[in-house]
Length: 331
Ligand SMILES: Nc1ncnc2c1ncn2[C@@H]1O[C@H](COP(=O)(O)OP(=O)(O)OP(=O)(O)O)[C@@H](O)[C@H]1O
Image 1 (cartoon, helix red, strand yellow):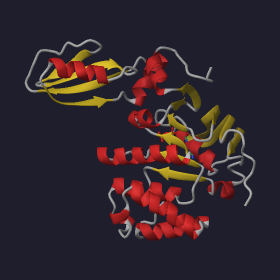
Image 2 (cartoon, protein in one colour):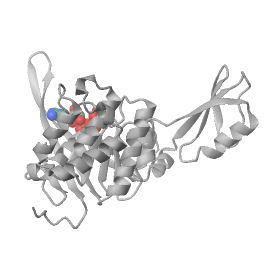
Image 3 (tube, protein in one colour):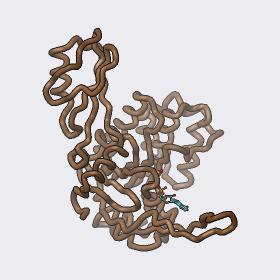
Image 4 (cartoon, helix red, strand yellow):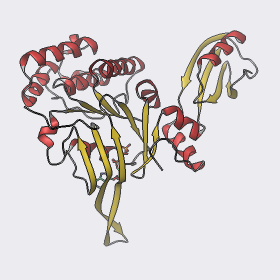
């Protein structure tokens, strides 16, 4: 089937809006109508092959945007195109071009083994047999699903289920993949597996990825570009490092020493907490951790260390405190 001409940006939003009418209780008996501007005039474009983080505090309007991008919700205003299609009007056609993964709920059939769920997905999207086998084979290998194919979804761990969900979203070769909190609740190893897979998918197949997450490490490891949304508006569009610079946020190196020592003194960081042999060193989030780690290892008896990213909520709060709205294309 011929696809519409989508020579331009793969995703394009111009002044997109979504207003919900809600009824709120006022006093004991009265209810007042109220409008919630969940998305309040957002414009951006995403080019084919980009991997973009879409972040913001709770209630910022991220899910509402994604729902409009998939055609589940109809915009109240503005313009929206995905792969040359109008999502709300051409939802079924668009479904063949996009994949969606929601970290908090599964699209798989709870009582069925993964293999059967995939068979149903194949029929839903009418994926031809050879292509299905190829895509499934690739996902099974790269997401390590071989031993899980005959296990009912309800028996899978969260990390296993997430990998299963990602595979299900890719069996029909979508151009765009929307991921909503894909690493939420996963252990370190599962997170690394999911991130590695997404990186390869983007590099090898050029799949465009829009990623919603509260975990800044996801963004740091996957996305060159990040968009920050708050109160339904785009606050920042640019690299993650630029966001850290604007917010002057700090990362923390947690250091375990062989024994209790006075606060560590190294260039480029300040010790903000000491508890027994453990010390916390804060340093600018935009700086590399490597030279700092080297300096600590050189001068102190090191047993272990770990790195803590700043909270997205912190970064945004600092951004507000400094009254800045930086990055490209946002004024
Ligand atoms: N169906 C709805 N009816 C009324 N209000 C809604 C509806 N869906 C979302 N909202 C409101 O719109 C705003 C944005 O919600 P949205 O779910 O898009 O935020 P979010 O950024 O995805 O938040 P979270 O990180 O908590 O998932 C919130 O104030 C929310 O209460």
